[in-house]
Length: 279
Image (cartoon, rainbow, N blue to C red; front, side, top):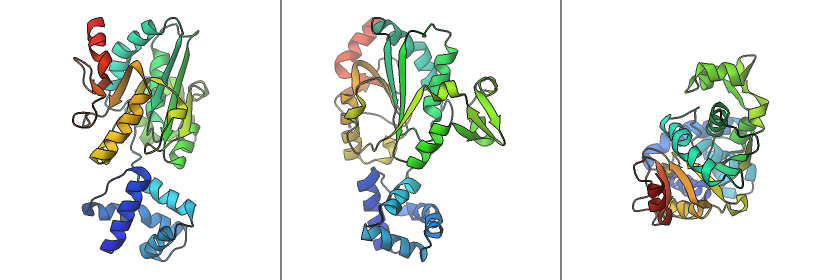
């Protein structure tokens, strides 16, 4: 790939999705975009880049972004965040929202849906009386392909083997051919929406819990700061924000801080002390 073509695609991807690619990732561009060359019947990567430069083929430009954005996800990824949700976050919110009996959870950049479905299963397994509660789980992503897959809740044997306990597979999934589909009752509990983290998502409203895990690592400092500013405005005053294990708000946002005694969970600065005092 010509250096000028790489530079153009890198700028296009950053402007479209926030993804930052260094020259060392040129191999990644070639491997992920080659299938699009075949799909669209183009004359190699040069032909694809020429079409993207024209700007008239919006479908192709969208597919280039989707091909390059990372879609890595699996059920109960890293375990600890879900244990924290069950043992710390959920008890706090059940008490704090006892009068309204309403809770809203956002899984941003949810890819093919494993994270929001993991939360839906966790709530089902909690043995709590949530019958009178309205609990919304919304998963968002920039990839329409991943969102369609998430809505179907249909996964391969490899995907259900990654992090999903066998007892949950048996209890909440139905085998369809060589794939597994999550139960309709759980599919109905999760909504999936298109969303680009570079744009405002204020129309989705306020959330009690926001999962934004393993996303910021692909952005530069300025983009991280802008995303966290927008996301923090949608976090309830006593809400919880989850980031990935390798991510932090230090030097990026002055609106958020790590929850005392926890790892990977953040809250708005003016409520951190209050939560610590509440235990």
